[in-house]
Length: 347
Image (cartoon, rainbow, N blue to C red):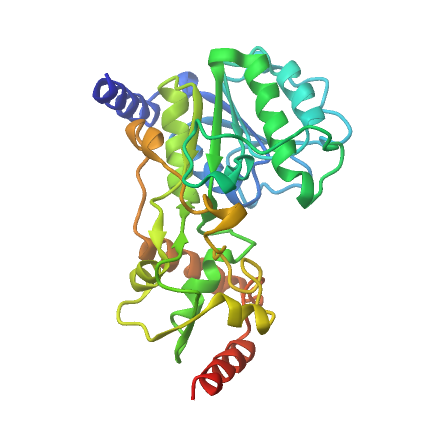
């Protein structure tokens, strides 16, 4: 059955790229000009979709050419003209509050399928390795009417539930891990791609056996289009393989000189996981399941992932044009100071 489903999905995606314009799927992306949304929009246009983007900011037709644009603030109200019957598929990239999803799922009830982009943060990561059936984080007593880091998991869980209640078997929930690739304004993956091309020993967090996990935005986008075309339903962890940190850096640049610095020393030096060393979260305690997310269900449904080196190359090509300072990670000076202090402690 799984092989037949995979072949059906592949055939549907191939058909999507060759249909006549009048028969092309009508796709609405809620939040289609940011990082993930822009990658998804470009993939959809390449496949001939009739694309509409709903986003908050000013006209961005220069970023995504060939799409109809609707400007709207989801904290206020969606346009009264928005009608689900005008779209075969809706992909909600921007949903952050349950109240937003109450409105959008109600207004767009007539569409064919509704894909909500959630996050692996919805899981209780203290339980170890994670599958789609793993326990979720608590939501009881958590206020979700404001957007704050502390209520992120609860907000996304309640958003998921709103979509599932409204659309039933026509609902798709994607839970991605860290997303990487061109247009990424977080620079979490990009920090490492940039770091390995600079000279000098690289500060490695904790040990080479720590884990890291990412998904290229373009691989996410292709899988989303395929899943919609194949009428998939349910929940999917959209993630690449869980990878040892040492292997990850080796993928980016073979034979790289790395100094692995223990977590207790990094803490003494006030080097923070995730913020100062992006993608790294110590794999124990409340984070035992972080970067240990099972992607089997998505792979069996057609998810394909590209090599880390390809993601790094393409991201840096885009990033070098941007020319802004990196927005994540240690500065070269700070990294050198920590490595010097670590060497002094061990001599």
